[in-house]
Length: 125
Image 1: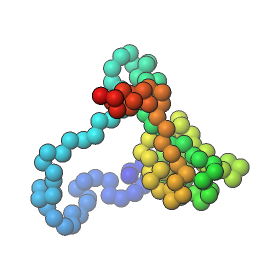
Image 2 (image 1 turned 120 degrees about the vertical axis):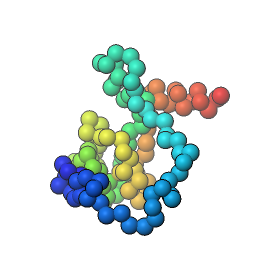
Image 3 (image 1 turned 30 degrees about the vertical axis):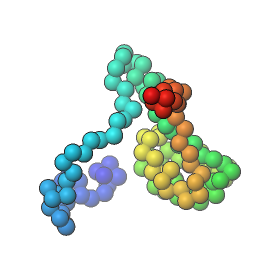
Image 4 (image 1 turned 135 degrees about the vertical axis):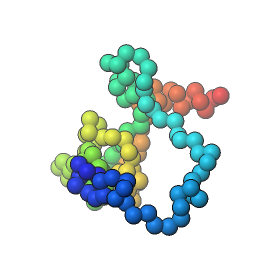
């Protein structure tokens, strides 16, 4: 928020409205497993992550070039090139906001090879 010049900058500046946080907190909440790779040599962690994680893929047939995905992308990883939306994977932070914002269903999520293999193995167990 600070980089984008949005306010507030700290939790102390936020005015809390509504129920007390302790009353709505889910006590047994377990966060989702992420594709964070923290094993192996440092130089292999990013390539392994890229093989595991799902990236947005623009379906040119369904895309209406409305720009909703570009407007919502916090990393500015999408741009219009020759009337078609293009994704920069190097800028993409895999938040999937573009996927959720597309009302035409033109953004699919495609896993890397390792991710697809892992998904198949989990389905057979």
